[in-house]
Image (cartoon, rainbow, N blue to C red; front, side):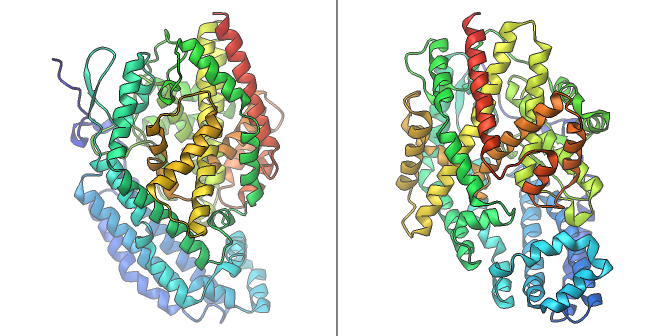
Length: 604
């Protein structure tokens, strides 16, 4: 019997395949030195307490000191979480991450008096501060603080809330450790007869296997692990949502959703328009799934049959370096100032490329104002998903690069709402590039269209279903109804039936999908993927067509960082997300792709 292919340890990965964290800290000793400095300097916050309204000098000195401390804390946290994610079983990294989180909590506690004290400054005094020339760099920063007045509590309550910061992370931390470090999924017999360990990193690769039994076995083995831990994970998710409700109530928000959307100044109608628009335009999805069943020659279509390419005789293989060059070519419409930096970063230390045992699953872009925009990948040569994931995370990273280059620290970061525009914009350009590259090859075009349809299906329609799940589950918590395992499964089952209709067979195991989505521990996050791709489709179309000024407006948008609210920033880029039009445009685009694919594939 062939030996099972195992996942390498961290020490077995080549140094050039890992990210280079030395721009953050040359070594752990330098991290320790800054940690001690930040810890010992924390007491200086007491010098400003009770004095913020006493003079403009005291006010602006306190603002500058607080931002400088936050900047250093982000350096510490970024390094610690990146090291921890390299191997979630390594206790040294977990300890460093825990200490960084604890320090962050203590800093929040020490500075918790500032926002209530700012709100307590008399209006005429605050007007004087805002007219001071020193206020100019902080104008929007202060506007965001001042608008939180109705949701800010007394200094004593704010201090207690800050003290609970680490406790609030407990459900997410427990799920993360269970999901990334403890769970094992067994081994799967692949289509060549080899035994391969099943993992988060290769699960989708198995679902893309042309052999139905391989897909089915991988699906059932994967969800068997979640079924074995279903009560524990359901408890973690339930407690996370109760935590969301607690903070919403303490902050005097009408709901968890209102609390989450407040920080971006996004009206709840944007969320409701998204759900209503998608639910009202599911017919193309049903048409596509029915065609998928027919094209694959299946009597019944299961969820595990929805990832495999319909054009099955075009196996995909692309090494990491080739993927980087493909990304650069696809993004050529953005110019050399964009692509040159991107190529150097992706090949020169931004990316931790491949899976190793204990490494955090999935992918992300991270970093801070004083670091490169790092990317965690679990890159695989055998799936086009890895290529799309790379260009997606590159969108985040280049957004970070341009923002931090153009903006001061207080505006160097951007909201997730606009972040998902930059990442999905890149994916749209990649699809455009691949379709043009293979213009004369209908089989390859069908393959790419198939992939683009599945990408939009997963980003726009699937994430909207996730968003509706969050809305419904949080509503139960807010009405004081118990959120048990069976309740969670019931909510999710209803949504699966609504969003898939009778186009697929919904296996009972699929109800457990709600237990394995990490983003549910960051409330009301996933809807931004759906709104993001809607904006991205519009903006990428304009840039690809070479519309006058479109590229410059988009690059300026990337440089805005957090200097304005996201809806306003997108208006600067050229799209208005306050109404349903961009979502409907994206759904119409999806429908046209489905019709084109069925026509091309049907004639092969």
